[in-house]
Image (cartoon, rainbow, N blue to C red):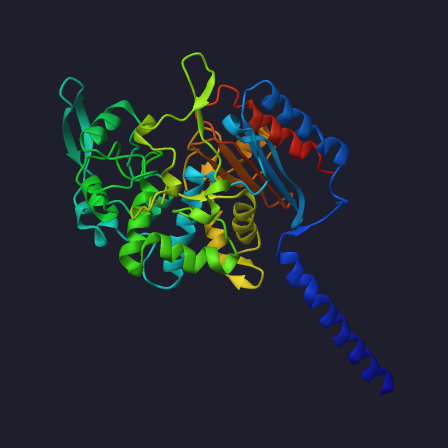
Length: 426
């Protein structure tokens, strides 16, 4: 009996001892050395990124690598502002553009878990202008007139999450739809500050033709802007307040904003573009109808597809929550099953002839895994102003590289970063 009691006590101590480890494993923790990393190989990233800075191919960058929940690299390179020789600190704040999409997608899934909407529910149930849509048939470029045919079915929330709705993108989409959207004064989403209502603009979008029949193709478009509008309608809150309450605050994402506060304005990186000779120049006001200082302006129009600013670390925390099955530091954001669905390929085809798409992320398919370094099932995306991220569940790896330049003739820095990250894994 004594030995049975002793075993029970020892077992209890073991369980209690393991609890902090389990909780600890859920969060990103800095380490001086990881047994899973070859640091000699990891140092190649420093040489490569610094070489791009020295050749003036990029002004600066931040990289962050998380392996097995351990922060194995988090660095700034070059300049956050070249005109003042301001160094790039690792906690610099970037315009993350389309990295906003995955966060908005998580937001709509929170409402789904709360029973406030269904994924195959019609968008028209929330925004009536989407009830009876048409699809572009013919287009006259001379006067931007067009003809349409009726949509075979209404678009759904799932269509929005997977970019199969038939919505296109102002400024960067197909030529015909760019002209139609420009005439309607629709914008890509970021930096809209004056006299604009998200609901008003999405209603306007709903009255315009789709570029293809719902569900039949993958087209990158204003899908997440519509999702953001649905979040506002269903929650009764602004998208900013909803995401702050449901995601940013619980996860401790203290540097992620639609409106960067004045107290943190000095941490916002300068955004660059290229001139006709591919020389890097500061982003001119009005380029893509965008003021480069839009994160510092007091916006009330919150684009669910393109408008957030954040740090590498904050975004890594968001991705780690997804990798953990919807929980981080004891705070559950999504259920494991919803995260599983989020990371499950949703399309019956490869959207870019290489990979599939889930509920908010690109999902590496078998073909993509054969062609690249990321394992099948890896999820990720990037941002218009020069950023790439991915999370590889098989390798228990998160990697992010942030620049602030669009376009970039030397985009290979992203590809080289990826190959060097994987080459450093033991």
